[in-house]
Amino acid sequence: MSFNLQSSKKLFIFLGKSLFTLLEAMIFALLPKQQKNVAGEIVLITGAGSGLGRLLALQFAGRGSVLVLWDVNKEGNEETYRMAQEAGAARVHAYTCDCSQKEEVYRVADQVKKEVGDVSILINNAGIVTGKNFLDCPDELMEKSFDVNFKAHLWTYKAFLPAMIANDHGHLVCISSSAGLVGVNGLADYCASKFAAFGLAESVFVETFVQNQKGIKTTIVCPFFIKTGMFEGCTTACPSLLPILEPEYAAEKIVEAILQEKMYFYMPKFIYFLMFLKSFLPLKTALLIGDYLDIFHAMDGFLERKKKL
Image (cartoon, rainbow, N blue to C red; front, side):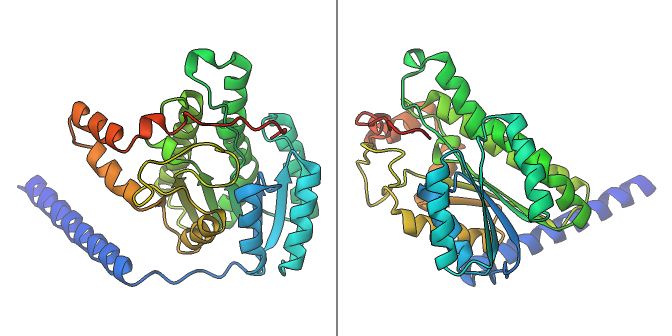
């Protein structure tokens, strides 16, 4: 009898809390959540020397954050450094770092801790793409994809998460991809690395939740192609539903999601609907949708970047 009462009580508490969270989500869907103040926060961005990383840095610079810029390209990173200063960043620190090298990540991370302080917002943005069919992709390029797109997240988390836990304050941002949600023709290694990055970010979030570390937030970003040059030559057959995103717009919306502490952020919004369909549609129907949207041929015109990433 006592067991039944306990079970019933637990069920009612669960249903009550579930209803509350659903109502809360509906309210925030209609009335956007207030953005948090990041003035003075130490924001580390990997891959800050160009593209999306640079634009994210400029967004935070205008909000008074202390910026820590990492990139393997020293010249590009120094250009971002100058631009961030002009945009009004409180302080800017640029470090040359190859995020694919574990020991280098740890070494530069120690340098950051000594010279700047504890990183409170970590944005894992650095990424590369080979754009080759699976059997045509050399082993060393596949390994590089995983080193940059996924394993770098392991090392940066290990380097900076302990201080966030000690302070019960921090924000982990994973720039994954829509290719981290669904397999894409011509992107086998890239998809695998982005799926892995997504899984890591989600799992670490669950760990912090279970350990009641409520001050540590997570945001996982999954955008469609962005016009940064990384996916030069790629196309979309349905620009009204799956547009190739303008970099400035993408950066603005990503920072908005971070400041609103959204856990998952997909763009464009049509990707939410596609993921809903993927969860229950028969495989043949899902493949028909992919064929209709011409997603299977999005990479056909891909032009490999020649410069070092």
